[in-house]
Image (cartoon, rainbow, N blue to C red; front, side):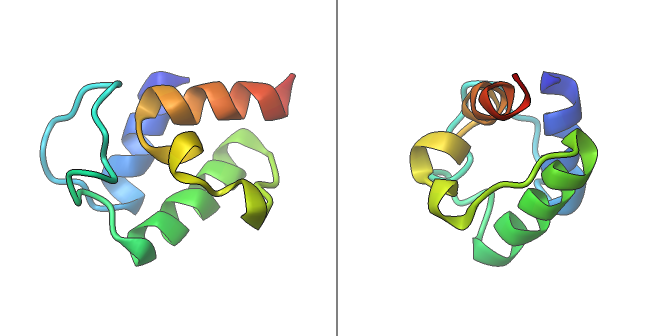
Length: 76
């Protein structure tokens, strides 16, 4: 799951540098609002989930680890 999330962030959000699973990609500015929308759409498609707008929070999307934990909750 982590590798797929990294791939989505790299492609959909256009992150150009290598990043760790616990790196705060929002704080570093690696993801802006438009790339976040693209990444969320790609995550929904890849993991066959619907992410409610109210759940698009800093805590849920700040890192690969945070995204993986959030998605696990939706999938289970």
